[in-house]
Length: 227
Image 1 (cartoon, rainbow, N blue to C red):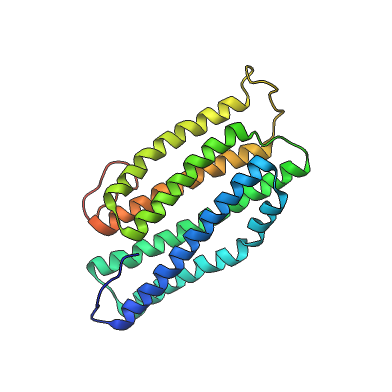
Image 2: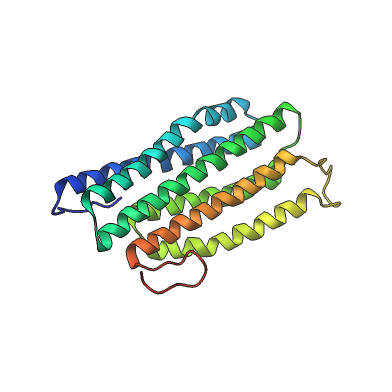
């Protein structure tokens, strides 16, 4: 993220840098896991799924540390104005990154179960949806790092396309016109739902960037009055 400059409290600057570093690290790890998910879905990579599952606890601990550091910053430094918004924004994102970890791990677990049972993961349906969600999350993480509110607003508009693609994917799974239609695979339904949730998380992170830069809450549709 961008440097906070020379704050009146150097220790506060150091605390924020620590939180930023952890948030950036978590985002990077989640993006790596999303890349592995593409291999899991396309190549039935059970080892890749296992590697994601193994990282669940360490990533959850990282997000807990972000939330703890944000709480500590509020307690020790009592920030106001834009400084307060920054800590709140980082805390919100830490919470959403925890949710994203759960969704990615859930996809890996359900994919592993499908591979074990010899069930189709329908990559022709799932991968385009996953690509959209990954792109949205990657851009949201970049907006958070650069604090680009305009780009963040665009991400929220893109999420509507992901929602539409999610509904279409569900319809395709049960389409009678599909060649060799798969039998009902509950794991696959959970995978598609989690992919849509990753898009929702990216949308919330994007809204948090707007809140940080403009003191405006856009999480629930139309822009609200500045906070």
